[in-house]
Length: 190
Figure 1: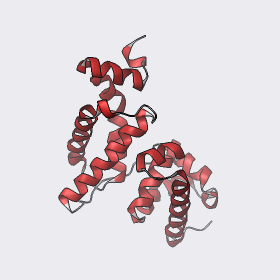
Figure 2: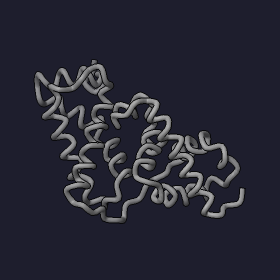
Figure 3: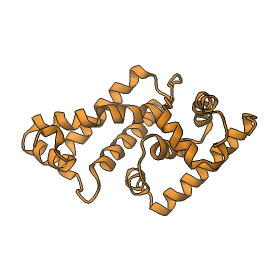
């Protein structure tokens, strides 16, 4: 089996034996984590690689502590989540200027889950979804990003945020409610 086709858990084991295999983990998660960090922060694009680098340093340093009862994806997203928080605390301010990209697949996921927006012109919604997300409380924005942009299930979100699945469900419902309230403030006619 080619190294790029190995499971995350196999790559962890190989990386612990030979650090050169860690490059496959980086290759597999670099783009995903970059997008995730970009979406949950308001950092400039130039600042994102530093956070991503810190994430991979922490992942490598903590590979021995990886709990195989969790999915590796949840574990690495948890480290990214914590690194964003650490960076925020360290800087105490969040520069503006980042853009939450909304592609057609993400838009379709949101539309299918939010009953009240099914009749809206999708092109119009795509333009305004970023500004609606930016108005949400951070905890709600992040949970919607994990659910709809990163397409994580409740268990994975629970592992990433270290919250019980019932709490995750409640947060998603509250986030959707806040999204709807912000959406209604835009005065879009349904």
